[in-house]
Image (cartoon, rainbow, N blue to C red; front, side, top):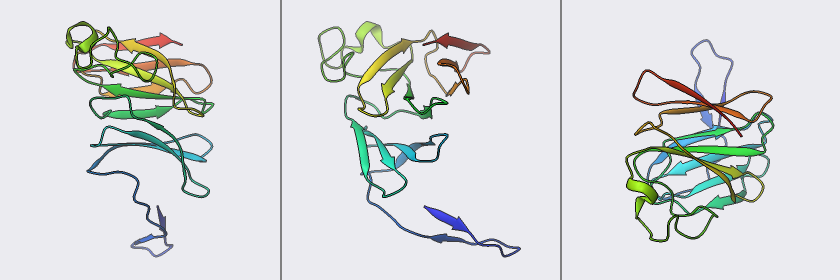
Length: 160
């Protein structure tokens, strides 16, 4: 976490550092209330942290690959994680989708978005997309509706 000083040429100063993951960080999101942050890293774990005391409040360890993008819903209740090529290993949060770990749950030729409850980390929705990769996911500010896009020229909207 950093703060900006008021100098004309600003310098960032480290306030506190926490060992939150192994490998490189790949995605980061801050909820609208600024009370939580979500983090994805090469270790494939998505974790949600309290910004007040920097404690991990939920962790999702169901993924075979790390998410490329994270986004909190406007009310902070849900976290959307977008992936490319391979679905997460569980529809319920722990077991494989379609029975076999790494089976791809349908071929692996489409991307998907995992939607989790931020208080528990449990999956509440899995959105399969026609895009092979999902580059960006954004929630509507007041509704549970997601907009996402991939390499094609299409932008898609789904309600949750």
